[in-house]
Length: 81
Length: 135
Image (cartoon, rainbow over all chains, first blue to last red; front, side):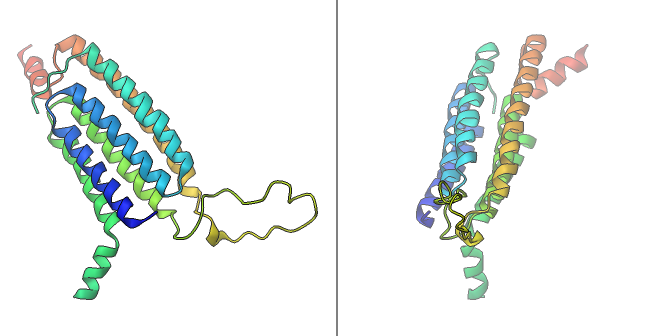
């Protein structure tokens, strides 16, 4: 994997993480967290860890986001910070 | 000095993993919302997994599946395998377990957050603490 691409995806991951913890709506946090997981999966696929990458894509970006959205709908979208 | 600087810049990925880890730790400690704390915990876990997977990476190596292994084993021909040609799969296997554990932890923690919301009608930590002291 070229280091430019690696650095680009890594900065995207950090931006997604910062946005996910600073946005003031829990549903937006859920979607940004899904984007974060998917970028992480791309990073692992680039490093040659294909098994880890597809586990993260299905379990981390898929099931976690579904759990998160379900929990947000059962509770509240409101957050103070 | 320049030598040290190039040494630091060449390991840029480790510094970015540490930044990611600190973002997760910050969210776990400072954020007031319980779900935000969970997101911070997950960011922390994935950054550690990323660190371990990056240890197994080798430059110029391919994914850890042996080439032409199928059909070559019958003829009695010895297959020469050089470890330097393949990425180390041991961290991958260990971190696969860690991913599954982290998702299970996340699910249980979200279930607990839903129960807390049903009891106190809030997910904010300070409001929950206020209600606990009032009783």
